[in-house]
Length: 111
Image 1: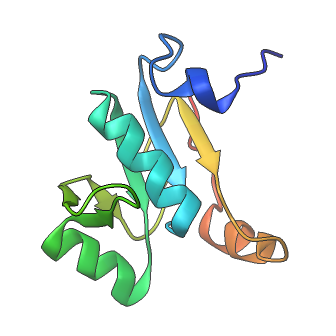
Image 2 (image 1 turned 30 degrees about the vertical axis):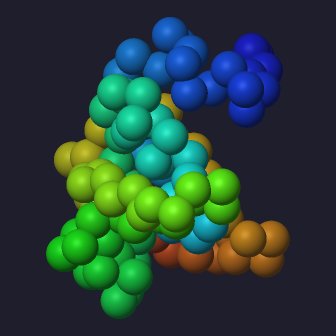
C-alpha cells in the first residue's frame, strides 16, 4: 500500500480519477480546496446548513497570510448514493464520528 505525504498529495499524479472528500470540517475543506485548485476532479460531502452554504456561496477560505478570501465552486453532495462511484475516498472525520460514516456510506462507492 503506497503512503502519500501531504506535501505531494496535491500535485500527485496518482489522483487522476474522481475523488470524494468525506467530511467538510477544517481539514476536509482544505483538502478538497487544494485538490480542486490543482485541477483534480474532487467532490466534497457536506451535510446540513454547512453543505447548503457551500453549494450556494462556494467554499470560502480566508488565508492566514493573505487578506484575500478564496472562493472555490467545489461540487458538493449531501449523501452517498448507490450509483455514485469514486476512484478514491478521503475520510476526514473527527475522532468518535465513525458512526456518521457507517450511516452515510451504506454501500461501497469505490470502483
